[in-house]
Image (spheres, each protein chain N blue to C red):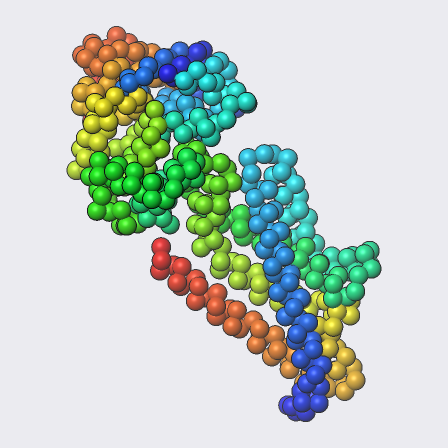
Length: 211
Length: 242
Ligand SMILES: Nc1ncnc2c1ncn2[C@@H]1O[C@H](COP(=O)(O)OP(=O)(O)OP(=O)(O)O)[C@@H](O)[C@H]1O
Ligand SMILES: [Mg+2]
């Protein structure tokens, strides 16, 4: 393998790398907030809200991300990277909501009952008693969702998002060094995902110990 | 103080409480007994609205528990509850468990709440465990913390749902002693328990529940020595002979 592809196109790789990181982190933060919101909708003691939350989750996690991406791009006419980040958020929210919901449901019902019977409101009980316990359970699956998110962000390339994958497409089309280019780009993804993966296992072990 | 008036409750088609009429006065200790599944927990949980009644009226201090206009969080300040499995918050220390509601619900300052918490920990005999986590305590100690947590709100009523049935036999006494002391101080208590010694010593009345109905209501001596209902006799002979 020839590393001149890398050195000759360093600025393009780095530009793509930066875009991939920004899109992933933005989509992660947005889908964490939205995911927590949807999870609470699904659990709240009010049926219509439950249904709304369930509909969201079942709809968006059961269609391909590519379709959501194209849809947001074509319908709203945003720039590629904006449309891509929004699509990633919409899609990842469904999975994160499920992870958070499972975490909340893993906390014994008696915790909520004890909190409510002492006069705390539902939202106080949720914030002070349930969520701090649920977060321990939720961190490992959330880490896995973030890894998926980073990899899924490569789909932004199909709408000219300027991310790593998009730059790689440009470079390989220009140089005809297809294998070399994509091996390099895979390495860039690994630089992001391997530390995440290790971080997740580390947290998993630590949390297992603290119980 | 607590008045059930023709209360019915259903879980779907299942009629779990049937025409309950029951008045519990201030300072009274009422022990509820009955076979498994007879609705004892449900009866207790209706009092602080962990379960909603389907028909009839249930009032606490004259305030309707089921009325949509009732501020249930405010009503619950007056009603402490102790569960079979303690339900202490595992991520908080004993002290934090106790001061949480007084601070968030009653608006006490942290130092006020701590002072009161320590007083009650003293009372239940485990002031030295204030900084421990629940998982570091024995079952009996956890249940005593749970009682202190309830008392720290200065409630007028304490509800106990089988507070000793999850405990090893050698720890039952320490929890019952705390409850007896509470009863002697005049706390209004509704206790689901099969501990006959406790019932005989402090209960003013025994309520026998069977298949969702109150079959018998009597003072302990009368109930245990001379149960009128055949089903109560049968039930007593079973718990005595096990
Ligand atoms: N949420 C629920 N939905 C449907 N049925 C329920 C529910 N909770 C309780 N039940 C049923 O209602 C009946 C009464 O339950 P409850 O827990 O009040 O009984 P209990 O007298 O406390 O029994 P135990 O001695 O086993 O604690 C039982 O048959 C139970 O299966
Ligand atoms: Mg019960």
